[in-house]
Structure formats: C-alpha cells, structure tokens
Length: 333
Ligand code: UT7
Image (cartoon, rainbow, N blue to C red):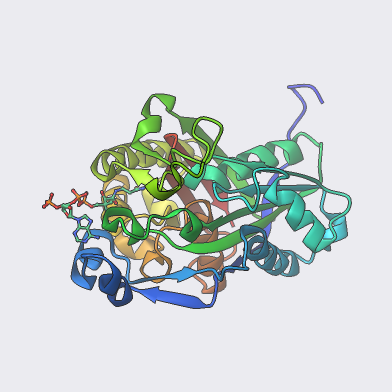
C-alpha cells in the first residue's frame, strides 16, 4: 500500500478486564510497613489493590481480560491476526507473554509479541495495531495491558509497596465501517535520558540475580517519585493536547478522559491543565492502585461497561511511565 492510499479507519470493538480476587487494603499494609491509610489516601488516592495468587501469572490475567473483550467484540479467537501484550512483568523473559495468551485462547492464526513501555504500553500497542490494521496488513487485533507487579515490589519499602497492584485490561481493534466509531489520533513519545527515575535495576543482563545479591531486592521497582510526578503532568498534558488538536476537538467536546491511574493528584493536575471538569475524568485507582500497563486498559473497560460514555462520544486516553514514556489516543466511540 502506498503512502497516498487512503488508510482504513480502525475502531475499538470490545473491551475486557480482570483483577485477582485477593484484596490488600491500606490498613493491612500499615501492619507491615511504617505507613498509614491517611498518608496513602492523601498522597495518592489509593485505598486498596488486588494481588495475584502465587500460581496466577500475568498471562492468566491477560487471558481472562482478553476473553471478555473478544466476547464483547463478537470475534472468535481463531479470527485474531495480531496479539500484543504490553507488560513489564512477563511470565518469562522468553517466550513472550503474548504467546502464552495465544496458546490459552487457541488463537492459532495470530502473530503474537510483547512490548515493554511500562505504563504507556497499552497505548503504544494501540498505535502499533491501529497502523497495522489501517495499512491493510491485518483485519483485527487484540491488545492487552497486563501486570503482576506484586512479584516485583519490595514489600519492605514503604515508598513503593503502597503504590502498585495486579490486573489486566484488553481491547479488540478492528476495521471500522462508515458510521461506526473510530480511533481518531494517537501519539507516543519517550525520553531515554530519564531511565534512572523509574526502573527495576536487577534481573536483566546488566545485573542478573545471583546467590550473592539475592537479598538486596534488586529485581524490584525503584522510583524517584517527586521527579516522576513533575514529568508525568507535563508529558501527559502535551500528549493529550496533541491528539485533541489533531482530532479537531475542543476540551468541551470530550465526554471522558481516561488517564493512567498512578496518583489522584497527577490526574487532578492534568484535568485542570486540559480544562476538562473532574466529573468527566475517569478514576478507579482507589480500587486497584497503579497497575502499570494494565491501568488505562482496566479503566477503559470499566468506563465502557459503566456507561461513562456512549456511542458517538469523544474520549481521550493518556498515559505515562518508566522510560520515560508517554502516549495518548483520541477516540470517537
Ligand atoms: O506509573 C508510573 C508513573 N508513576 C507516577 O506517576 C508516580 C509519581 N509520583 C508520585 O505519585 C508521588 O511522588 C509518590 C506518591 C510516589 C510520593 O508522594 P510525594 O508527595 O512525592 O512524597 P515524597 O516521596 O516526597 O515523600 C514525602 C514524605 C517523606 O518523608 P519526609 O522526608 O518528608 O520526612 C517520605 O519518607 O513521605 C514519606 N513517605 C511515606 N510516609 C508514609 C514515603 N512513602 C510513605 C508511606 N507512608 N508509604
């Protein structure tokens, strides 16, 4: 297909999500580390998070969310041509978690791979699959954000362990017919000068976990929270503005903003800077904490299923994470 060929419009045909059964409350965390429900709620807005069982992996949660999205889309697993899982907590370093999901679903005809863009991964996956569908390479795709962050948290570090949770969210993307909704614009960016602000330093080839360093919690999340906070507000605002402008929208046209669920103060700051009233901003981090790549995907599914927007409404998704990375999408539902 040449660059001048008209691109095929792409829509979100179905969404799904899943969180593990076990809930860990702020009060329970306060029994383990020097923190309090008051500190966590005031500084983050988080009240509880869901924690996966020992034998429940990222691919299991991803598969549950995927089945719900496929059911809503009315698409059979065998008809999938592309599966992308966005995760920083894969079941194994290789093969990709997407291949386990493919196996679980019996999606034998799909190409399956993972992407690592931290909390921004789900919208990176949306942009990649939108392009592959609109270029004519594939007819439909399954994108998933899924994380078992509880396996990569230092449960003795109060500055991080109160923030994160486990879960998965999914969406099915397919060609849009005239009159149907459409993904109008997508944006993504990265700044590799800021890798030191948020990372998991150990467990990769740079710092394998050995019997000598096993007690140092190197394979757990480390974050300079205040610095990350500042960049998050700036980058998410810029990314959201770009997709709003490219879609010829104004703030008053947006029925629902679905932001990354990391901190209520970040979400409030973005709503303020975008001039979108708080009642049009979807928040569920009180229930789940920060689930990284899964967060915006779970929020999209909950917003969809609870009627936070309706057919024809305009919504904006916007995310930010380690890398640093950021992304946004404007969608006519
Ligand atoms: O998902 C990827 C993107 N991630 C984010 O966007 C996260 C961005 N950052 C944040 O959300 C916030 O920076 C945090 C929630 C992580 C931290 O909030 P903060 O207002 O920046 O607090 P702080 O790190 O500056 O800590 C303030 C105080 C410190 O005590 P001193 O030095 O003032 O005496 C911390 O030791 O709060 C203390 N503290 C805690 N106290 C009780 C840190 N963690 C806790 C805790 N409980 N869990």
